[in-house]
Amino acid sequence: MAEPGSGGGALAAGGLAAILASTCCLGPLVLITLGVSGAWIGNLTALEPYRPIFIGVALVALFFAGRRIFRPVQACQPGEVCAVPQTRTTYKVLFWVVAALVLVALAFPYVVPLFY
Image (tube, rainbow, N blue to C red; front, side, top):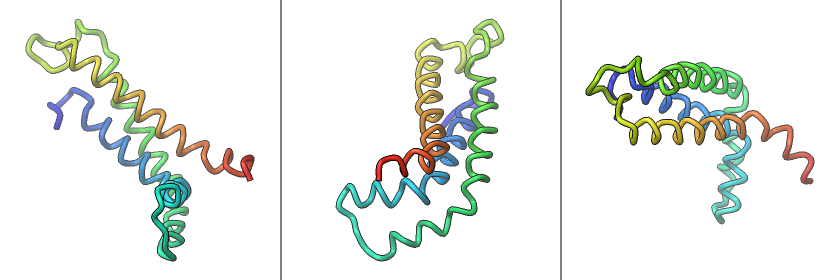
C-alpha cells in the first residue's frame, strides 16, 4: 500500500482504529439509516469498552503519520514517495479525512444526546 517511511502505514492504522472506535456508537445508527435492521445490531455495543483503546491507537497512529506526511520536502531523498507532489497532496487529504473520522469517534457519544 505505501512505501516504508511515507506515513501511509500509520495513516491506515489510524483510519482503521477510528472506524473501530466508532462501531459501537455510530455503526448501529449508520446501519439503521441505510435500512439494515436486526437484533444483532445491538451486539455492536459490546465494543464500547474498547473504544478508548481504539481512539488512543488512532491518535498515536495519526501522530506518527503526521510527522512523516508534514515533514519538509527537503527531508526527502530524490525518488522517495514523499518527494512526489501528487503523493504528498493525496496523503495530506487522507490524513485530514482520517483525522475527521477520529474527531467523529471522539465527539459522537457526547453530541448524539442533544438530538433526542
